[in-house]
Picture 1 (spheres, helix red, strand yellow):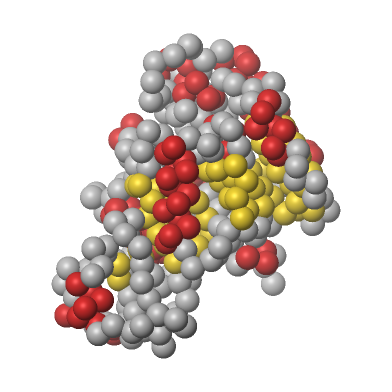
Picture 2 (cartoon, one colour):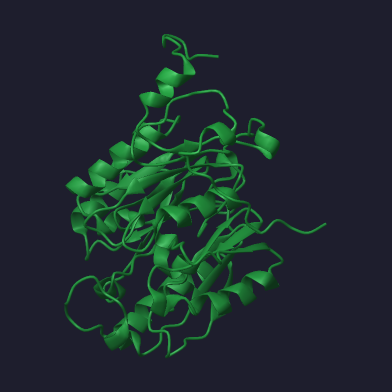
Length: 352
């Protein structure tokens, strides 16, 4: 059925007018269920009935495959029982990847900040924290978000865009298996995906196409989480999509003020069927925050400390219904680390 107020065009005319790529399909070419949709960032999606893939050879196909994130749909968004974190290796100071040269990391201070971060998750919020040991041969291993995307009971082990980080997946696989999650491994050598490029809103996924994540990686994520729509967003002038945005609450996107951040937000708004509220902060780095819905605490937001980003902290203070927890991230920021980078959050339902 056509949308109200929109004239229905013949299929051929609509395909010719669409410079983007997408795929609609289900078993044996049948119409998919909710969210069985992959949308490329090359243009805006338009509604249309399913078309057999055999007659659409130019459209993207996601072959069968067999966040960090939370699932359960919008009502359960932010629920969390477990967090996977990893200790800092000393090799991070000199060998961690960074997008630009800068001051050396103060390891002692970085360790203190990270311990406070983990302490908030475990002590203040009551999560079951699974902490992996540091590995000196993997200087970036503290940034666990990039190697797994967990949604509901499924975990996608990624193929990080930086080859030096791919061995980090092995230890993450073991800890996620211990939680009896359904594990999907990204084995396609043409695919790359960093979890820092994956934004889950509770309704859908946005995947940043960046220096670390490519189209094939986004396709495999779409095939893994079939119940949710997946849209891709170009990322320019930043390492990851979540370098300048994150979810600050149900239906609420925190976004930086830079031109690149605002352009990405506009793309997400165009791609989505849903209208999100936005919380614009002056500093892109401060837009990366962690929202949790803890039964005994309510809405909780971990955000960058006022001494780091005072103007952005003032914006977060407007969220009167949130428990606000400022977290310092001065040292890991020197190697492109942000708050979401350092944990994989999981909502594990009790087993019957």
